Amino acid sequence: MAERFEIVEKALLHMLEEKKYATLRDILATMNPSDVAGVFSNLEEKQIPLMFRLLPKEQAAETFVEMEPDAQELLIRGFSDNELKEVLDELYVDDAADIVEEMPANVVKRILKAADPEMRKSINQILRYPDYSAGSIMTTEYVSLRPNMTVEEAILRIRRQGVDKETIYTCYVTGKDRKLIGLVTVKDLLLAEDDETKIEDIMLTNVISVTTQDDQEEVARMFGKYNFLALPVVDKENRMVGIVTFDDAMDVIEDETTEDMEIMAAMTPSEKSYLKSTPFDLFKHRIPWLMLLMVSATFTGMIITSFESALSLLPVLTAFIPMLMDTGGNCGSQSSVTVIRSLSLNELKFNDVFRVMWKEVRTAVLCGITLAVLCFVKILLVDRLLMGNTSINLMVNGVVCLTLAVTVVIAKFVGCSLPLLAKKLGFDPAVMASPFITTIVDALSLLVYFSFAKTLLGI
Image (cartoon, rainbow, N blue to C red; front, side):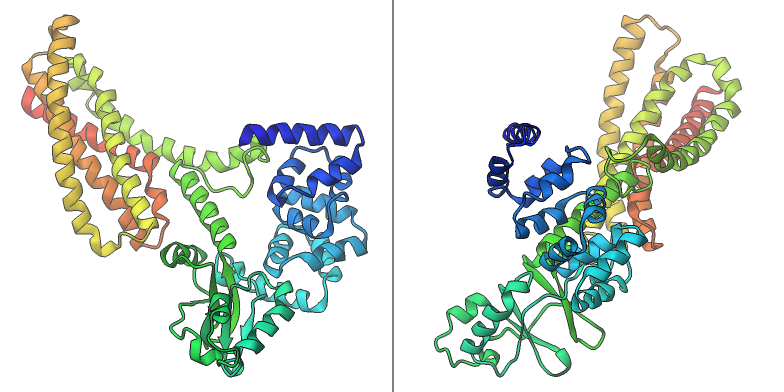
């Protein structure tokens, strides 16, 4: 699929360079707006306005929504007032609001000036809601019906208003003061026994809704749980103010997943794509965590320094430090990633902390014993017999393997508990991912290692 798109993209760029505009227009008209936006991402700045003007009006608006903010800003600055108004008239309110949020102040002023009063009011309404709330991602364009309408009247209303609505499959029934009292689907209307049937007789009254202040990530999860195409948004008095559609929920899930991955990799989240980020942008997002981890890693160095005399008496112990630290870090990462993912899917709550710990400790014991036995055999056969390292006796081997088993248990315990604790304290659990947990486990594994060495080896 990707290879085929690359071939088409090269052909389109060649037609643009050869000025075969008629053929180019015909091909673009058959393409999905998302694919057309992908083509625009590879154009030079001077080519973007030229190709955009080849698109049919409706397709141009849909493509505009899918384009990168830089390309959108470039086009807006080059649009005449009439061209800008034509594009805005074809946009849904939530898409227009998203564009306004990405643009600089002077461009926003021009957009709002070109928008009709109703759209301007709706955009301002959406922008007033807190970031990352249901209100900030909703659209005010939905079909509203009255309970005393007949099926025939409802269908007629959908035909008249549906052209400008983002979705018409699910219609919402509102009473006085726009209070949400039910919903009905187009399927229900088409399959009704009689055109004179009242909407209140066929509507679903047990409506699942969200409030404008609900977190957008929680709203997005509800789409996966209930398989909705749209979700009604109400205010504190249960008055209908908008809907969140499936495509917006998918965008939220993608953004939140990307943010979690960046935090788990010890980076502050970035709103720019990788290719759009400058080296300085990447530096700003990475250096704070790297500095924090570097400082925290000094504790590991302090522990090694404090046991320097013991290491001088038995230098062979130094050779096993990297293996113990790496194994502990890997075990902690396994547990933390598993728990963080379960928290993000709402499979776990802080009340489950003891169940999680008990499960992880039992898993850790099994893993620790298995790794310790394998490590004992490996040291005995490889390090002592094959490599001839006579300083590794059975007691040294035992200290290393015992430390390994205990380290695995500690790492699993730390890895599963810290994300749950972070969630309880109101932090993002992803903060307690691999780099942070690895640093903690490294220090603990060294303390265990040298404690066993001093006790059992008498150094």
